[in-house]
Image (tube, rainbow, N blue to C red; front, side):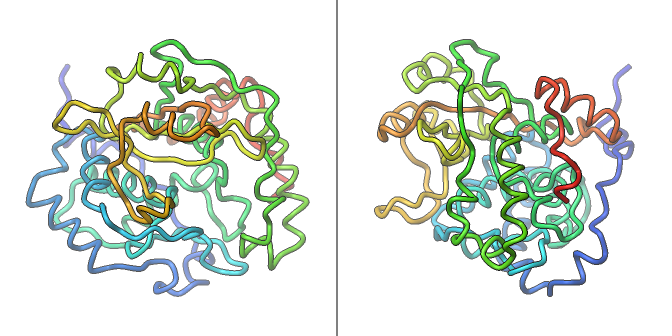
Length: 327
């Protein structure tokens, strides 16, 4: 039986509610910057009927619409103590660029006459935090991209397609420790020393995740399979993390599959549509390869906590969710 899109959307489980204590503890002006830009993007999306496009196309459209937005690092570090969902349309780093593009694409998939910044913050809450839960604790945020892939796949947000087209390999003996080594760069860790030992234990958990990538000398073999809006995690050769960067894939009119990202390179320092993903990977000796997550339609959301946990256990080979006493 064919089910209409309207009936599917009506049957969707509601997003997890933003806890009152987290939302009310930080002013709106801290949590959201660029309301005019948000409204302009919504107007563009509505006038061009982006909501009717597949989600990957929607992600790519929003990403492309944010080209030339200045690059500023650490845009998610918005307070010294209280963690809360946030968005900044005036400045983006690599994480907030892909996250806002995805959040906007998911948001307009829930068809309404109008949208507010809080609608976007609800989407960001759902994808940014482990299990879609934020009560103001910094460690509830997913800080490492590789964990984001696992957690969001378990909840139906993305599908990790890294191993789908062959040529992938596991990343072995990786020690995630970037945040505890560079703790002075993170406001919350700098101002809350008690978080650092817990972050170390969280990093030890993440280091054990079964992460795969397509090596950069093999990426050209799978480029034909990659789609607009795919989330491209740039795997690194170095210790500290599995990934050092993230962007979105987009196939331009010349047929080249390119990386679109908020670039910190001095010649850019803004959101750009860059070279082909293969050429970009080869540009830096530190790049090992790519990890690919494909956005899924909002109808795929997993609403059951039990199903989420079961999925996560399966995806991580039994490693599951970090110990609850960290939070």
